[in-house]
Image 1 (tube, rainbow, N blue to C red):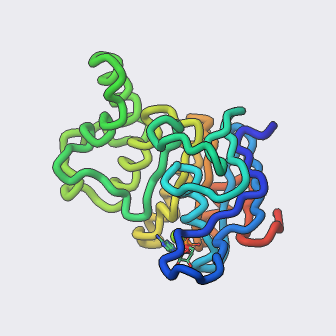
Image 2: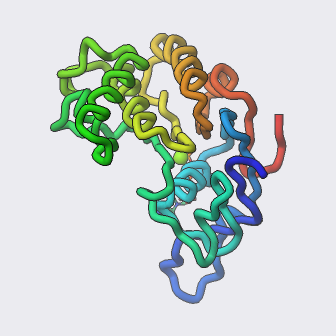
Length: 222
Ligand SMILES: Nc1ncnc2c1ncn2[C@@H]1O[C@H](COP(=O)(O)OP(=O)(O)OP(=O)(O)O)[C@@H](O)[C@H]1O
Ligand SMILES: [Mg+2]
């Protein structure tokens, strides 16, 4: 069975106009991702790319179908494992760093279950991984957009998630910075052997980083 497996998924946002027919955002949607695979997700605006990531992260409840991760059902009509219990990491478009915490503090955030020394080691390892060790004590407003992006990536990778979800992580970066960050991202993901879903509007991002690209909503695979 694939590591992340979505079968016959139906999802609609709660209908605010009672009586109206349901408009599915995802209708009979299927997706399989192998362990360690980096899957790119493309497609026009409004097709449900961010919605799909939010479902996998556990922020939206599905109406029908099954989402399995590492052999366990995490979403169905009956089951909805909480986001904290899913071991899924997510990087949002705006990075979502905590402004009142340093770089190191942001990375340590998801590691509260680890003993102090193990947590310190893990933060150091992640700082090295994204080459931010020198800037560990800075606050988000004291570092560049590209550096914030790397911190967000380190923060989401620190607790060793089973799946990493990236929703247009490069969209705030200029094209020059993007070129460097693409190969850096590819390298970081390869080093951690993370299974990853990467949403972008930019075909160049997808081709540089991903093993395979899925265009939503159709089932075309390239
Ligand atoms: N919280 C919400 N409540 C109701 N409808 C929503 C909500 N969030 C998104 N939608 C709708 O769901 C559809 C899919 O949105 P989604 O954000 O998943 O698209 P997307 O593919 O990520 O688009 P983009 O490329 O612009 O980011 C859109 O029609 C959107 O208006
Ligand atoms: Mg989106």
